[in-house]
Amino acid sequence: MSPWKTLKHRTFFWTFVLLAAYLVYIYPIQRLTDWLNYPALLNLPTIFGLWLLVIAVLRLSFRSSSRKLELILYNWMGIGFVFFCLCFIYELLRLGLALDDYWAGVGILIVGVCITIYAMATAQRLFCKRLEFRDPRLTRKYRLVQISDVHIGSRSVGFLRSVVETINIQNPNLVVITGDFLDAKRVQAEDIAPLKNLKAPVYFSIGNHERYAGLDWVIPLLEDAGVVMLRSQTVKVGELQLIGIDDAEDKNQVRRELAKIELDPECFKILLYHRPLGWESAVASGINLMLSGHTHNGQIFPFNLLVRQQFKRIRGLHTERNAHLYVSPGTGTWGPAMRLGSCNEITCIDLKAAPVSINVNN
Image 1 (cartoon, helix red, strand yellow):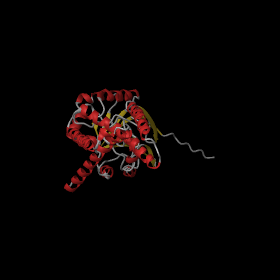
Image 2: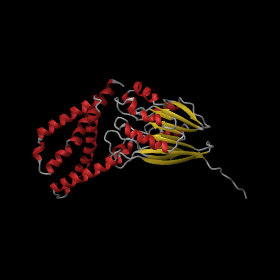
Image 3: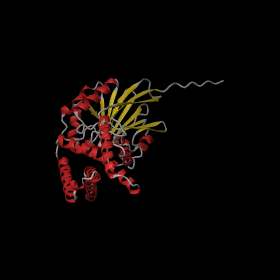
């Protein structure tokens, strides 16, 4: 990356951090104390001091490996986002309506707490999504399970055990992980040890958080857990050809890497690529099924509205010319362990032979 692009990236990043630090961590408290008739609790010097403190702690968290610090910051971030949205909606309403700020503040507190509890409870549950595809290249049934964006680091080893147990119940022939399996450098071998209990071979494509954590460290860690890494590589499993491509910021990554890979026309071809980009290139190359993640379906509504500005396809099944793209909403959560308007998904995919067509001529 050029020095100019690096400077531009850092400027954008820290502008976002400064703005988010105020809007998510401070603004809801400031407005609620005002509406509830306690404005003296957060006067201007206190607000500014708290803002600087939050920024300093956030910067420390970027350099720290403290699980406790991350839990406090990330969950406060999720709760703050919920209350920011509620406060902002009320700000808009009070522009044109004569409303009672005190009772509105009480209502926002009650609704915000209820939403937070619901979102935290939803983030602890796993949902199994079932898909079925038929293709004439197949002569037998294959069952594969996709997980994506588990985010061990943000999530615990106990959560991973639940994921593994749910996968094993499905009795898959193979398991695919489409990136962002972990997101912190403090993750150790014991944190991902449940992977060894999977009863099917596991294939992995790199996500952006593996790149952030450092591939020199991540790849040996995952390989020791029995995972097969696919980095612009293919592997055949019966009549299936799995292709894995590393995540990249470059929107042409899929097109460029697929051009280097020999695709077998006799196989049902499955592409594992972390972010839902490059599907048009995949279709043109003859990929039958592309599996992605990355978006979390926004994770906490209404953040999905912002995600849609970056990706045309942020969840679910998309089909074009008998080729399919499935975008998982993610199996875990990044940052706050909260889900609102989305769910933790394990995707169970059955691949079967196409029915034989019989033409009857009269």
